[in-house]
Image: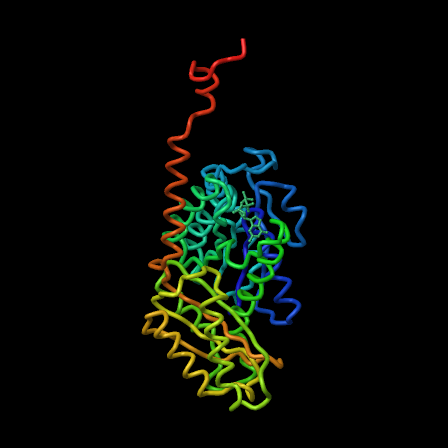
Length: 358
Ligand code: GDP
């Protein structure tokens, strides 16, 4: 699927760059245009991408802090500038536009839904948001911001593909190392998904087409993506179990929203050399995905790539009823209550609740 990517905010820019680099390294060419938008000049300077700085008149290039309402307001008032930038960079070939953002901050949290809404009024192609949810150790403001942002994204975008920042975190990593690792994993999954529909070289009926990705996401709402790979034998018939086991791994331990298995629709892509792909394994894996997700709409297809390994990529559409989404929404609501009810620092400094020193 040929796409244009727009990263909004710090995380949005970094993840966009990671996807662009992966697409370039693999020589896929699915990303047909990409740039980053931010209210913080310093975050844009750190990127190796075209950039657009917005809201200079409001925040002077310093960002919006965690104020996602301001982030949304600035994006709404500057959407024309961003659309102009897009016009110059997106070829008419783009089959979808993907807005990438961390939903817990300010610029991306407010800006992504505002931009998605604007893009949908102008473009006919689907507008997706690739949204990053804060990990459970991140503070109340991140959780509350992400809750409001997610609600708005779910309404304004054609679909929201979610990444949970706790998904692939290892306990011995610093936050920065953790981000670098998670960004690489996002890039691989999203990069493969976009490229999968482009691989028409291997021709054959079973090759997946980009319309399958679009159809899987067509019901809107929330989506997630899983991936796993394993070494494979050169003989297809020896790979039946490999295909079923990578598929299980992709869905049960490799997804961007852990524990979100129940889904309305799913797409299973098996990546590998056509000679190594066992049809019996693909059929079994597909019916397992059907049972596991409870979805009657499980699409499937191959992604021919040169490799000694076989990979399974699972895209789930309509995961809003899953436990993980519910857990996050509960967390976001509690955080919003905490922020609403918490002591107002200005009040505390001026009333008699706390005794002064003298
Ligand atoms: P903004 O610049 O105001 O949009 O704010 P950020 O993009 O920094 O958003 C903050 C959220 O994004 C928090 O939940 C962070 O954990 C997350 N975040 C920041 N940088 C990264 C990154 O490089 N990768 C990932 N996965 N998450 C990030």
